[in-house]
Length: 373
Image 1 (cartoon, helix red, strand yellow):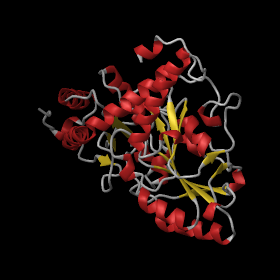
Image 2: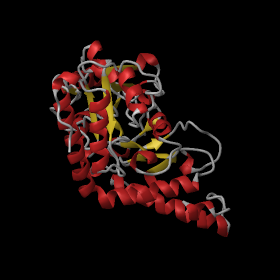
Image 3: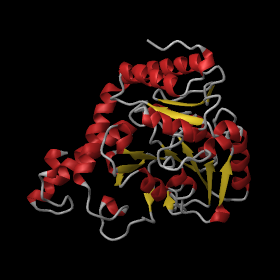
């Protein structure tokens, strides 16, 4: 990124300085494509995953018809009740062309409900786009994307995945196999804030209705001068995450499990959300037996511990989680929900310190819990 900041050329200009900047952008595009199992020409850089989701979730995202026929858009949008707010509120479908899919008590998609809706709209001659967050931003629950993709494609639909939480942590090419498009955000895998990408993984997909119009940058899908330094940082972070992924997954899962075990020692009534299904190795969503999330966050913050009560985009104000509500979690329990997130900089000592400070500030005194060592 420091090298990119020293460049003065516009990456869309034909002169030498511009070509130098373009070369750095193209390298980053290759790095993102490699992480996703996609073609570099189908990586569209954006300001973040919110913009990428809005760009994709449009009736005008088209794909080539069968046998090379006329390009087709989508008539209906189906989205999980547990999607990120930028999907629930930021899509570009008219309200009467949107349906919400339920999840099970574990947070997984209700596949029977998906099949019912696909059959319903297919019988009416309507093409469907389905939006499913690959891994939930609050609970870390991982959805069965390959199975979902097979069902959607059987009805000639498109599947878009918000893969923000999954990228850089688990293999995207395997866990999102079959998804037609992915939304990514650099800062979730150690890159800079304010840059992301929409990755079109299905052949023949075209963004016909860009959100930002003007110049022809990003093959006409997203106007505006490229954020060269941010894009370069995104590519470098993606390459680094892919190199370290296997060992990092194991390391983070062990730390997460250590935290969970320690919390259970303090809180006899601890609830771990999504504990019975596959989850991200770096995410733990739980609720203690007594303290509200608001009170717990305040006390932990004063103790030097940074947690949240939901996704970071909505946790500036503590409120009930729509994700837990969709899972059927009792509102009283949901109001005690906290989320622990671990990352590349998290150490075993951080875990020990967290458990010590949690016990000192929040653990019920009558449990007689033993501090983790």
